[in-house]
Length: 106
Image (cartoon, rainbow, N blue to C red; front, side, top):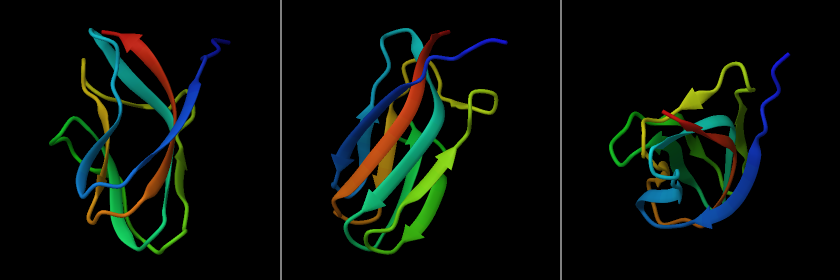
């Protein structure tokens, strides 16, 4: 059985549009096993890789609600080489985010 070491990080974002939350080391990809967000006010929120990648875990969220997705180590999501993870917000609303990830070489 192969074990995966996952790093958990948290932070906050609050600007309208793209908010970069995690940037990989040069030449690496971000591999997600868990993501969540918790906005202080009503907002549409979603994650994406890069500034124009497809939005995922996209939801219209009521204030103080939590949206979470546990992909697990076998069904992870992975960005492209050097692509940051972005939290996209439809309005300037303070939002707490959490990410479980690995950096992998391409």
